[in-house]
Amino acid sequence: MIVTTKQLFAHAYGKYAIGAYNINNLEQCMGLFQGNIQSKAPFIVQISKGARSYTHKKMLEAMLKTADEIFPEAIFAIHLDHGDEETCMDCIRSGVYSSVMIDASDRPLNENIAITRRVVKAAHARGLVVEAELGVLKGVEEHVAAEEHVFTDPAEAERFVKETGCDSLACAIGTSHGAYKFKGEQKLRFDILEEIQRRLPGFPLVMHGSSSVPEEEVRRINAHGGKLEGTKGVDENCFAKAATLGVTKVNIDTDGRLVWTRVHREYFAQHPENFDLRPIGKVFMAEYAKFIQHKNVKLGSAGQVNNVREFLAKNP
Image (cartoon, rainbow, N blue to C red; front, top):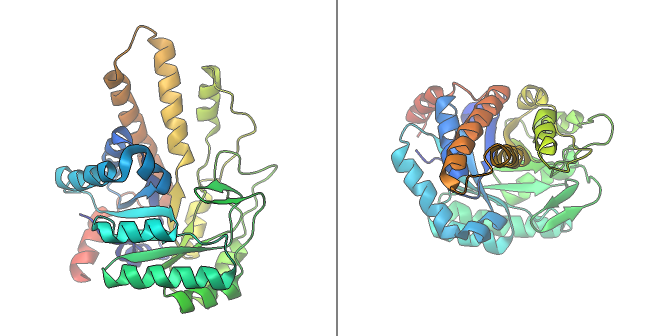
């Protein structure tokens, strides 16, 4: 069942966070649905601007509409991740997405507000909801790049939400995009979340760049020819605390890419005679499903799907 992120957040707020997972191809899509169904978790499928050009937007959209048919027990939102204004408008018109993210975080505040307001107006007119971003994460994600963190200002966040009408807000608290998040100890600014929650009680917040970059995945990749050095991610144990501070959505992309890389490097090293993509595809889908199940336990969303179904029946 395809729902909006707003519907999911209404049930999750203050209790748990929902995993938002990026996909680019069929194998990721199948593993994602299998893992969430096995762990009985509501979830968010994220399609980025890059994914829409890699696989072609219509192919990805068709896969997700088909997944809704063949996995009727799944409860999920279809979300555009890090869209510019043009891409947001295209997704709104498509009739497939239930949620879009407008990322104008690299623009001056007033311009970010103006762009976000336009997207919100168009989305709400068609029954979609909007995630926006204030502050900039270190790293590169689609059209936004930054060498250092620009932390979200809680006072600006309060103004931004009230003036744009967005439905959720991605905050910069020290996470980063990619596999190289920290030098030294992880230092996440939970005080920023606390102050935003005080100013905007009940408003859903989002953590981007939240892959944990597991050391074991990196070790196994490097043991089979990889060259990943100095990688470090977000401590998964912080998700529970973030959820109590209003974080209802946690974005995880890099970790899924690491699983893909590890599975393929190991398989082809162990089966050099193989030239068929299907055996390795089956291995990856199963491993990706296990990865999703693990993340959902850490997020607290595992086992929540029936509760969400009952909640939506009472709150259509």
